[in-house]
Image (cartoon, rainbow, N blue to C red; front, side, top):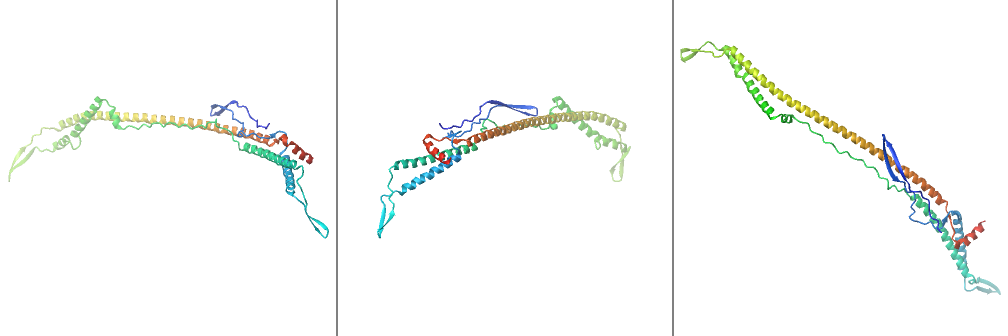
Length: 345
């Protein structure tokens, strides 16, 4: 029976546990298959006992040399002998070498020698092929899944608000009051501020003369009676009353403006804090996912390295076993091998 490659390891389940920053990544994976695939090649005539490769090579060479000797003998056969006689002296020109009676035996011997040589060479080549295939084997890592990095969904950045948003936060009554007080402050201020009508009246009142002259015609004037209907104290009192009303309206206007600014500031502070919180959560999540990814990737690469080294170790043992194989001689060629082995002793 041909010798078949039988080295194998049992397929057991195992757990891979990798610690990374206090976290553990545990995966259940089947143990790597270390049955080396020789493409279903059966190693013919190879066994733990038999001829060494050097013995097989020597016997193969001897088979070839002996077959050549028989071939030379076969090529020497002829149909006649030739001779001449000169001065009563006979000279042989060609020795007569007829086909011997055991020619069939010689032909079979020659055929067996070539067959034995072919058998040995095929066995030697088969062993070389086995070792070559073993060296080309690579581990099957298809059960390992390379980790992929999970992307974090980007967060929404809220835009800050301007004063138009703040004004929109006022109630209808508040906004109507603001419009009224702003109009009051504006028109009251126009009446009392520098360059206003009241300011001009107050400035001009002390300058009005008690009498004025009106020219009736050339060379003829008549006095103009000037009657003041305002007094400085009354105008001052009026100024103070209007100024007080203006102050109250302006104060109310400033209240609403400050309220709007505060609303906008508070809302923008809330928005900025919300954006900052979202950014912090995003960065923390991204950092955690990246650390998990690096940890998983390190575990993945470590497992590849471990399984590859385990595979290479087993493969070297298989190569070693294959290199120690010998040629198991088929019984039909055993007598030829024994003949040459005896001659070597």
